[in-house]
Length: 209
Ligand SMILES: N[C@@H](CCC(=O)N[C@@H](CS)C(=O)NCC(=O)O)C(=O)O
Image 1 (tube, rainbow, N blue to C red):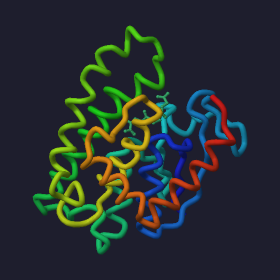
Image 2: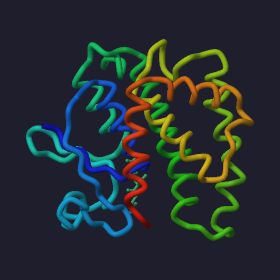
Image 3: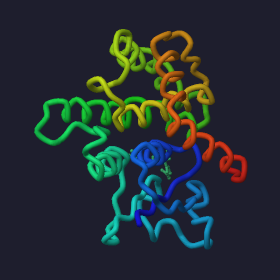
Image 4: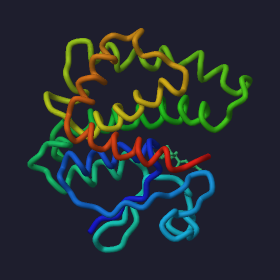
């Protein structure tokens, strides 16, 4: 069985959403991203992944896969018939990778990561100045589209849903981009997305920084 190391409401939520959308059973291990302890047994999370960051997906053959973009595509490819990623060779596969990279680098690492990890105003001034311009990209794209890629839910939507959820606690009100608010509402209406978020919100209350 696949195993996912996650931290509640961290970027690994996108991987849980993808697994839930795909109906793939997995064992979930809560890895505390500040203490670097695996909560199940108190072991060192860095021995699971030297990056000390979630998500980490343990594959059926025991190999470890990190990086949301790779983990999400791996999960999608386990059930190609569901279209959670366009198949390799389909030009839309590059659109999927384009969005996964953009969300991971420009929203997550350029804004969410410094906001939650470096709480001083001086290091946050530039990320804060830039986030509006960054968010206008998916906002414009989604003005007349239901999903990021093609006409169905993909793992890029799982990734963006997570990022949009974190923007509020990061101090950004997405109501200023009606297409993003409407999109987030649509995504949260999906049973698998709702289930994954509810599970992690409940667990989030059990862990402290
Ligand atoms: N590039 C990685 C970033 C992973 C990442 O930064 N995860 C955060 C949680 S959202 C984490 O575990 N951070 C702990 C750390 O960097 O020490 C990905 O996209 O998966």
